[in-house]
Length: 116
Length: 110
Image (tube, rainbow over all chains, first blue to last red):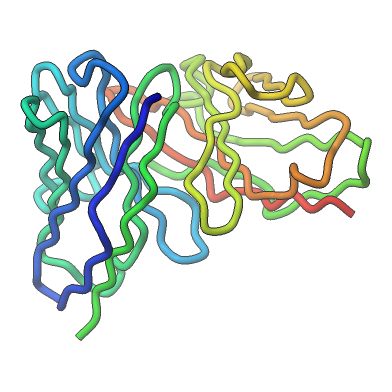
């Protein structure tokens, strides 16, 4: 069965960077893109960007351009999302999701807390 | 990209129907037939309920249906059940390989 398993919760200080991983299983990793979405407490989801797992091509939301980097390791069937220059407003649950006519499978989410 | 617009909340009694609207622009909802809907229960990841405006993934009950007219997409839940109480989010392709979400609608089963 398709699964996306994300890394554990993180606590960071303002100005730090965070790198969240998303390991895929149950399907051919390079056949689908992976999206990254975050959700601040009590808010709706916010699209951050995506990566073509086959080519490594990426597209980022203008809001995060310059601060976010999405990469993948095909040998490990894993995608990574790194967000830099963290601020308190970046406190959120970060999700990866498989892209297939909608975001059809989601990871369990990774809580990133930014606090001094 | 600007977020899509959804009502904050809708409610209905068991067995009734409720419809949630999702208003975008001619650059996203109005231009592309790539609107999807997600159900989210508290503390859980979102779940895909509708994709490509009106298609249901395998396993999603047929009481969930989607449609679109102009810049507004809609999700209708017919025969409302207690387990349908959740937040619902719309999402649209917005061109140039980008996406935009709505703020969500809380569905309450009375």
